[in-house]
Length: 120
Picture (cartoon, rainbow, N blue to C red):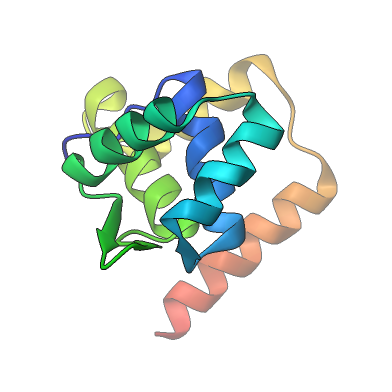
């Protein structure tokens, strides 16, 4: 899915929207002024760009997400595995664990996901 890349500023903004949605665009301007020290045009410019990417929408002055935080990061993760490991989750896990050992809690959590998948 194209548009999954966000710069640091866009990511901060996205987190604010996800945290406050649905939010009136005027209220979003106030939040961004307080939290990011942005002026009104900056807020609207970043909002427009993220709307163009299909992440948010601004309808009748109310900003909501088209993609939830979870859906966005899930798609971003899928894109990463596809682009860097030819879509192979085992190859990604092998590369990840080659430099960092998994804790027992992580192994248990992964096993639980596998068991849930097998059960249908």
